[in-house]
Image (tube, rainbow, N blue to C red; front, side, top):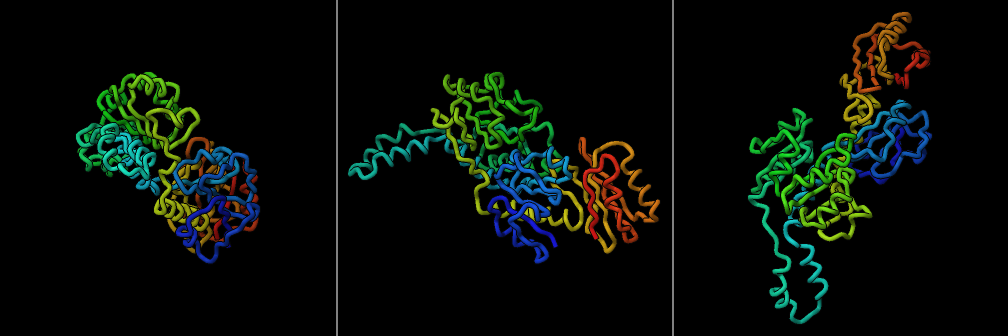
Length: 387
């Protein structure tokens, strides 16, 4: 029997996928796995029994990835599960920035109850006029699950779409329309596009990627959208470009002190994945990944360990070892098993940076002290025997 703990409210559509052999607990000391959405785990002291953390969403900035890796805790996320919800909000952001819909609505609220409001609206509506997006050029920076959906949707709305992603995966490429202009450098996106939308993760290479120089390369009156992460944009440089009018409008899903309430900035309170469907999709994916890891040892969509899949476990034991990615680890594992007369039916090993994962299917029942003996090997982090 396995136990799981939810550190935030997680959709029952996902939790209901757990079979009866899984029980919910309120104690981390009892939990085999944790499910989390927005709760910060950076100050958490993880008990040794915790084997995995699943983030019901894509971003994992609330989880201490290195700390988890060092304790042999696999961290999963759910990429693409909320992609449609974010895509729809990006399209809404395009329209809100193109036409002063918010200003018009606020005007109506301010004049609510006035007898002549209909006539006054006809006179005032020119103040809220805007432009149509059809025929305009949209630059999509990052063509992963969300960026690809945004690019394809914009094409259907009559926009001319430019895409930039130096790390474009084969799977993402298959999902893109052939009518999208693939460009090789960020400068071309800046130079050509009327609208630019960001869909990249925050890593060392992307942090602050929108700064004074990149902004200066953009068209006058460009509209910039950021539904990825606030750290991608240097706010001081952006505010300067907004003040001069070089950037016509900035739409973001991340409220910050510097930008909230500023002129020509539309700030949404992180609603990208806040739909019933997105929350259900994320919960389902998280639960399936945790089940597969606990019952079969397979790792799919981990952010701190390599993905590794040996399919469904058969009737014989499966051994899994999380360890540092250093030479001769597999040799030490196989030698130990050979000395104990255990035959290996199948073996796979994957690595990711500093960390590695080894899965071994054995023909015989494992000897009682196997896990303890493996843990004595230097550079082994966690051992699990799935019977």
